[in-house]
Picture 1 (cartoon, rainbow, N blue to C red):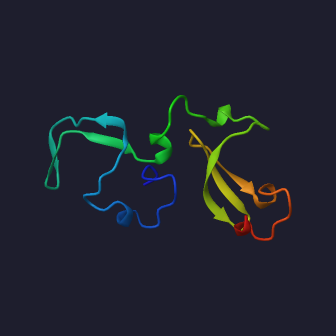
Picture 2 (cartoon, rainbow, N blue to C red; picture 1 turned 60 degrees about the horizontal axis):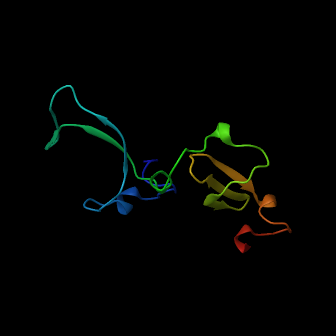
Length: 115
């Protein structure tokens, strides 16, 4: 499920109904030792597909935890807002972190939703 979307999906079945056209990146192909059947389907290969937007829109090298440096600036996407801060995913990476509410504005804010 984690490779369907960068954001939390409360109801994946509703977001990805049967017949919906999707775009994904094939991560691996596993061919079975023999042609098998799974239900009514004939299985010739198993594909591991990633459909997260962050993976599909990436070009170049991915940023890893080892690349992150203190005091450096990075762009990112807010993935969740809470009363105590926001969760941010660094662009071109799988690295996420919390920006505490005290770090979200130069002035005091009582409610982060006011930003």
